Amino acid sequence: MKVITLDEVKKTDRMVLCPKKNFISNRFLVESDGMGYSITKTIIPKGTVATWHYKKHLESCYCVKGLGYLVDCATSDTHKIEPDSLYVLDNHDKHRFIAVEEVHLICVFNPPLKGDEVHKEDGSY
Image (tube, rainbow, N blue to C red):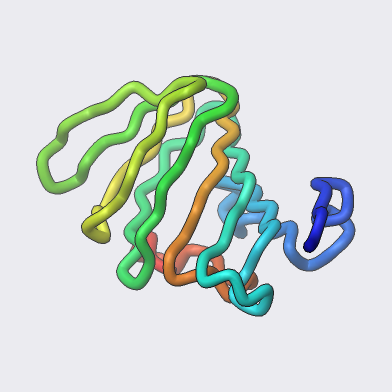
C-alpha cells in the first residue's frame, strides 16, 4: 500500500514543468511504480493554447478545476472542458487544448509514463 501526497511529488523530479510553460505535470504514479498505468495532476495555465499528440499513449483526463476547450485536430470538433467532465483520447487523437481559465486535470496514461517526458516539437511524447 502507498499513500502519495502532492507535497511529496513536488519535492522530487516527478514534478515536471513543460519547457514551453504549457503545463505542470505532477506525476503521482509512473512506470517504475509497477501499476501498469500512470496518474498525474496536470495544471494548464490560463491562456495556454497547445497542440498535443500522444502517439504511444492513451490518456483519460478528469477536470477538477477551471474552464477550457478541447479541439479534435482531425475533425475540428470542439468540446467544453469544465469540472466534472472527462475526456478520453482513445485513438491517439491529435488535439488542441485552450485554457480559458487555469485548468486542473487528473490524467491516466496507458502505457504508463516513464516520468521524465515532455512534449517534442510536434506535440508528441
